[in-house]
Image (cartoon, rainbow, N blue to C red; front, side, top):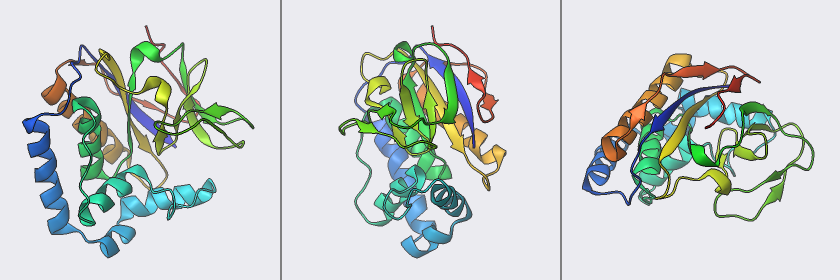
Amino acid sequence: MFIYYAEVRGVTVKRSGPEVKKRLEEVSRRIRASLNLEALKSHPVVRAYRDFFWRIDVDPTKTRPAGEALVRRILSGRGIPLINNVVDAGNIASIETRVPIGIYDLSRVKGSLTLRLSREGEEFMPIGKPPTRLRAGLPVLADDEKILHLFPHRDSEYTKVTESTRDVLALACGVPGVEDELVEEALRKTTRYIVEFAGGTVSDFKRAPPRAKLPSAP
C-alpha cells in the first residue's frame, strides 16, 4: 500500500455551488455512458481494491472501496450527496479514477503522520458513526495522537473538513495492482478541483511507501 499526498493552503470551504454541481453532472454522464453495474465489478482498478480488501479481511461486497461506492451510486440512479466544495472535489476525482481520496483539516493533525498497521483495541472515530475499537493488523493513517483514516475507505470525525478549515492535506490511496501514475493522477485531479472550487495554493506532490512518515503539520 502507498499514498500520494499534497497540501492545499488557503482554501475557502463552503457549500458547493453551481460549478461543483456542473462538474459532477458532467462526470456522472460520462460514467453512465461508459459503465454499468456488471462491468464495474470487473473494472481492473475496482478489482484491485476489492482484492486488497479481501487480503485485509474486509468484505468488499459489504464495505465497498470508496471509488466503487461513489460510481455505484451514480449507476444506481441515487446520485452523489454534496458535502462542501473541498470534499466534493475529492469525490469527483475519485469517481473519475476509482482511486480512494482522503482530505483532512491540517490544523487538527497533531505531529507526524504515519501509514502503519493498527494495534489491537485502538480507537477509531469514523465520520457520522460511533467510535469503534479496531482489531490488530488493519492499515491505517495515524498522527501522534489518533487514527485519521482506515485505509483506504473511511475517514475520521476528528479531522474532517468544515467551513472553518483553511489548510488541507489531500491524499490518494494506492494498493497492489493499481499503477502509481493513476494514483498520482487522482491526487492531481483532486488538488486541481480544490483550487478551482475553493482557491488555495498546492504544495509539491510526494509519494509515501509503507511506514514512511509524512511532514509534521504546523
